[in-house]
Image (cartoon, rainbow, N blue to C red):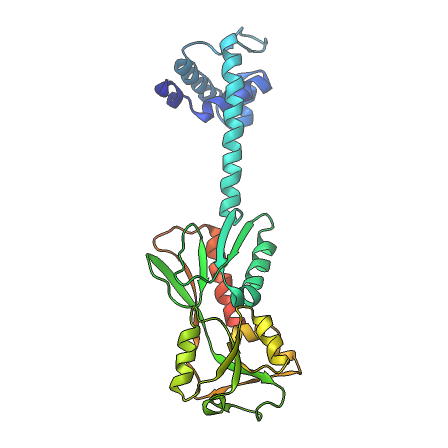
Length: 301
């Protein structure tokens, strides 16, 4: 059975369908761009594969007609030709950048970098299927994702591109500190709102302590807008990375001020990861290019 199937080629079935539609070998050959003898050879090969005649050939001006076996072969053959055409169309769309892409992200990237990537991907490939998932686990895994944004390197068999250094800055109420950079020692004992002690937050707070600043953390939340609402309410200041500040629209808020810290803290590093050795789809390749471009556009001045 398998040998029977593999002996039938799509070009044989295409020739058969053309003969039926044109009602002659000669007209079918002209349509397909073959010689008539080539079409005859293809039908002969098909008949050998199926073990019988697929056409009655009356000769002269009379049109050829399908045999009962030919009707069976043509019915299934047209299904195969339609599936082959659909496959070719799907491959062409895939190569053009359509298809599906699964991207893991986190809050700051979702607010600042990813919107530009998604918008441009959809502008270039309106039929693409973009799936996003937002998590900030302690031990992130690529899993079935095509791409994963994370604030740091991740373990495992992965490759990456570094997108930017994301410096930590002080956000305070207007007038809470003098204009310009703020010395770290001014934060020692001062009330502060902060992220939970996950991801890079412990490293950042250790860096503050190393600079002589041990703020009194009065509230923790993983939601940037919540922290900034508390800063506006006067509960305390916040030390946040630039992407979080930009994504929340802080620079345009006249109730808040953004200060550099002196000495500055080690920046958070933003990476885009993917599984090592994995062949990217054109859509994923383009997404990486756009992420690099978007990161350069939003990098701190």
